[in-house]
Image (cartoon, rainbow, N blue to C red; front, side, top):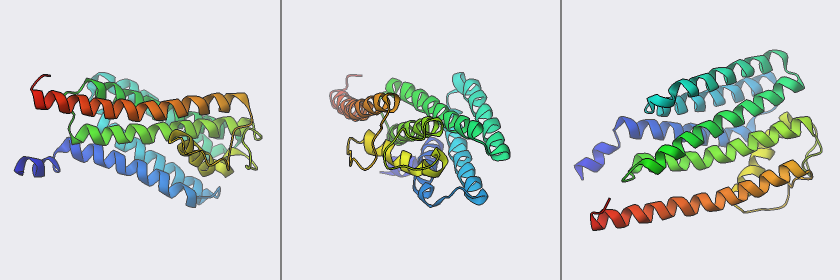
Length: 224
């Protein structure tokens, strides 16, 4: 019991929890942001918050930290350019950089998640973060595509920046295979991505549950 309590104050648990919390904040604050300067600044601040949280987690994996730092610095440069010039090109590149960074973090976390034996509450937190990163990554890529193809999705009007949360919402509805049908892709590229996202969302849950069950069996039998 004492060891379990102490785990809540373990640096790795605090790092993974902070990252997970930052992702949740990004997702739940997004609906209340508009395209005003204040809204764009808050949105950028939230992205920086989640990025810092990810970096803190990534520092545990020294062999990839320089690649991660390069990706993040490039994303920050694009973010500053999009805030400075606020035109269609840099806005699209901003969304593409968001998607690339989230995908990079998710892949690295997934790689290390599959290597760890046995799983602890630290890795469980990272497993949830991977799922949220996937939803955000696809959502930001939909934003990037819609920025260049305004008619790519139904029931949306204007450029992607005005529909950012709607596309992130669509991404998570697709990831979880809920599929309300209020928004749907009208072009081939987002349709193909939606198929892939649905498959990923289904198999990711199956893989994680299977891994947990397998490690639980190994723990009970003493075979690792």
